[in-house]
Image (cartoon, rainbow, N blue to C red):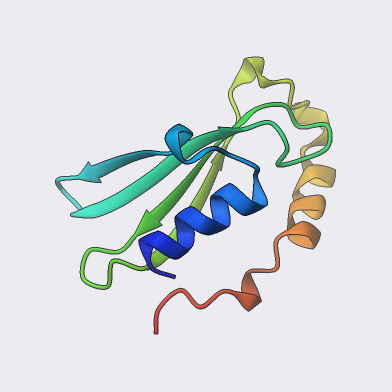
Length: 99
């Protein structure tokens, strides 16, 4: 997925406004990160920071990071069940990271 496709997926899947997506360059790795805050990654998980990483040479999606902070409402003791929910909700086999 190229940057425009990733942005379209973010706004569609997470109901995020285009203005809420921040773009950052990693000068060391020469990758691009598209980040935003999402309340609806998990039904009871609290707010998460979602970051899509685009590769240096391909400029296509190579990685997705999900990060919850301590104050986000994610209960550590429920982490195993949250992991299972994420695996069911996110079918990464359907994504084409690199063409």
